[in-house]
Length: 93
Length: 229
Image 1 (tube, one colour):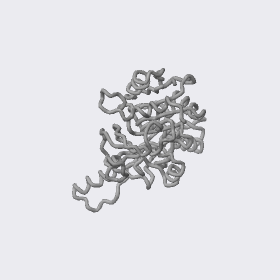
Image 2: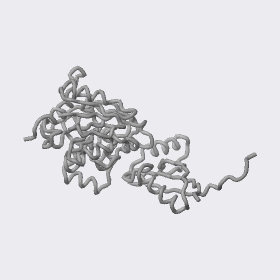
Image 3: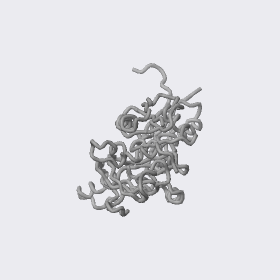
């Protein structure tokens, strides 16, 4: 039986890659008077669901998907959280 | 010499390239739709500029998986020539045909300008029509043209003489002030170790027709038609 898993994926720039957008946002905060804000790094957040027999299979597939398309390993790294989506039972009111 | 120009949804420099190879150089040229799988009739594949697949996710990330790009990768692996211009360069790095990546310009702006470029190497067909260290002027138009590679890759690029073009001053000096986008080592264009795959952010096709005022890019295409001595 297959289950549905929801993945919350975070793609971030590797520390060695400059993030000019992050720097621009940081200077925006400075303009607003927040002088205590350190370096800002901007990344991507992706949600998706997959159907898989178990959590391990889902996790392996999402890892491949991140590596192949969602992140470019040359400049980015990624991590994700996986959650089982409970099957809906009965008729919704 | 038969040229093929890939056309993705969102390509917008494809016809400019065709104008150069077909109309100015009188070479057989055909446009290759991104769904095509057979490009065995082509000698040179050009991946043009634009915003392929809307540049969603990352520039060039999705085009890489198109059937025409899979055929282009096989074409390159046979030692045949591939040129990626601007978005085409991004596609070639995403597909792994060229090392490194192109990220957001240092100053965040989309840059549309004409800049001096130094030709670093002239022993390849692509650049043989230029003089060594010649300074040429080419248009650039990009938001994500900042070349990045890790230190080990950069070292390899230098060791294998894979850097073909660098942003420079009008006198040909390399400095950070004339680096428009923050590219490492002022890199504007590179090739693979074999030299059959080239990627560059500047647009040689936009500087080939004398009507437009600049013709420094034409020699790159002409070089391809001349047998290397």
